Every structure is written in C-alpha cells, then in structure tokens.
Image 1 (cartoon, rainbow, N blue to C red):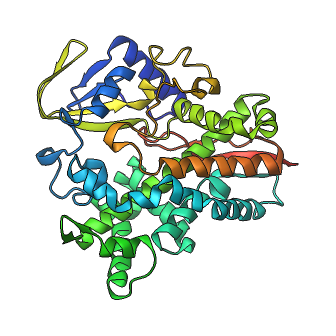
Image 2: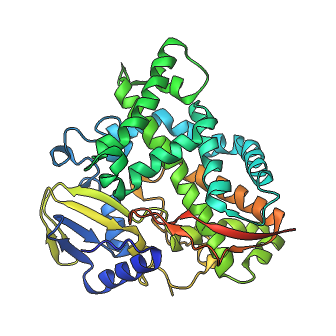
Length: 393
C-alpha cells in the first residue's frame, strides 16, 4: 500500500483507486490493513470494542505519547480524561473567545497590510490558532516560532534523517524538546498556580488521583498540536478554494451565513488529517475480508470523504450538501467517542479568519510565481507554505 507524498491531488487519486478496487487492503510492508469506504470507516471509528484506540502491547513501551494520550484511550478511561479539558472546548467557552479571535485576526493582517504578496500560512493561518491555544494553555504566545519548528519536526518524516539532529531521529527524540518545554511549565504551576489550563490540569483528579507530570505533559503536547494544526490547514485550504472557485468569495461577502457550510465542504474536500489508526481486538469481517485480531488498521478519511456511496458527485465542490438537517457526516474531525475535542474552536477560528480576509481584500489568489509547499507527511493534508497575491478592498 503506497503512501504518496506528492501532495493532495495524487493522494486523493490513489485513495479513490484503492476504495474502488481494494477497499479492504493489506500492506505486507507495514503489516497494516487499510479501509477506504465511508461505511467501513464509520464502523471502525464507532465500534471501539472491536477497533481499539489503545494499541496496548502492540505499541512500544517507550512511545512518544505513552501516558495521558486521549487519542489512544478507550472508554471508560477516555471519557474520564476527556472531561478534564472538555469544558474548555465547549461551545460556550469557544463563543467567549470570539472577541479575542477577531482581535488576533485583525492584528495579524495589519502586520502584512503593506504587502501585496506574502505567505498566508506564516501571516495568518499558523499564528492565529497558535496564539489562541497558547493563551488558553497559559504559555507565551511569543514562543510560536519555537512551536512551529518543533511541530514541523514532529510531523515531518524527513526529520528521521535530519543531519542537524543526527541520523535515525526517533519519534521520541522528535517530541522530546516540546515535552521538556511543557515539563518546565508544569513544574512552575505546581509551585505557582495561575488561572490557566496548565494549572487546572495540575489541580485535576482522575478517579481520586492527581495527574502525574508526564500525563499532563502528554495532554499539553496533544492539545497544542491538535489545537493549531487542524485550523492552520483549514484556513490554507479555504483560501485555495476561493482561488479555485470563481465567484465564491463575492457570494460569501454578500451572504456571511453561507460561510459555515462552505467551511464544512472545505473540510470534506481537503481533510486536514487523512488517516486514523486503530487495533482490532478480535477477528472481524469487513466487506467479506477477515482482518485478524491484534492487527493495526488505518481508516483513510480522505477516501471516505470522496466515497460516491456517501456523497453525490464527491469530486464537485458543493457547500449545499451541508445545508439542512439530513447531512452525511464527513470524517475530517473523526467520529464517535474520539470526535475532535477542538472542532468547535477550529470552526469558529475558520469562520472569523475568513470573515476578516473577505473584509480586507477585494481579491486574494494563489501566487503563480511561487508554488505552494505541501506538508511532506501523507497523514497531514494541506499547505505548509501558501504564497498569495492580494488586492485591498
């Protein structure tokens, strides 16, 4: 099962072929199974009894995220841990952040107000969600350049052979600097608590026991990474869509209520994360194929999002498919108990950022003189660098 790294068009084409010809596929090279159909992916993400997020003994004991990782927990423990931070990402809590999000978007665009050409990711799509999540956590927003460097090292498979870090850099080594960064903040909050999420986690209890430092550190790494990467990719993909869909920007300027379904279609059409992984707890039959117990399975979200059995004419960008009550779910925020905790935050940030882009620019398009750069990791779908040309309103 190849994993194309040439960018989204190649990856979508490959996933479509797999879904049509080999929807339940086994990769002898990696030992992993792959699912590509919408119905199969939904089943996998819903049935945590058969498809476990906890890889247990299959995962290395020195995993980069071995403790406190919500993404590899199953109920009931997952439910208890998720409750520790769930309130901070409730719709009410996110709505309270709206004024600050407007301020951040305005300040970031002010910083490039004298430029007709710039990288949208560096100017807005990356710093906006990082500033918001940093303020929630209680870490300096001035550290965002450091976060970007560390995040790209974690997600970039080329870092495995980064000469500056030594050959064969392991996942643990890639995560270690960010872990140490948060470890210092946790130690500080134990001595001097503040009114922030880190202090809240230091005070929190699960089943009558306080969280250990390493549990909190893993929590914070996941929250930072998930709290900004999704929104960064969503904002970049949205501007790509404005470039690719003539007249869409004018439609949204005239009717801002159309922004939410447009963003949902962007999420389906350009999913920020392309895969989700689980481990079978028992032999399970999927589409007539038996996947043995204790085998890793990859759900290809990008394949499911383009399944014609779930979405009519999936190759067509059509926001109307997300208008109304009888809407088929895309899987860009996951599904089931592991549905993205930060989905309300990402949606709100996307809506506010897009409003400010539409207000400020009469025209925004991709810079044909400077090609965009894709994230090199096929599990992450979007632009790492997105050069744009703008015309002030």
